[in-house]
Image (tube, rainbow, N blue to C red; front, top):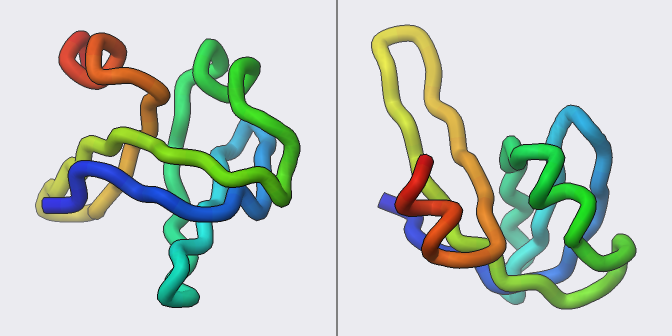
Length: 73
């Protein structure tokens, strides 16, 4: 399970965000609008707490700024 990402914020829009790790891997995450509004500008360093949801038809990674938001999800 992916529990946290630390890297550079590449994109930030209502459809989600992309974070590039130091190893060069880019993760696409879905985030609530309340999180999106609090994220820094693209190019900034970020640390995102994540929840990975796997179903029969999809795999999704959801991102949050703090542990409380993550737990509420």
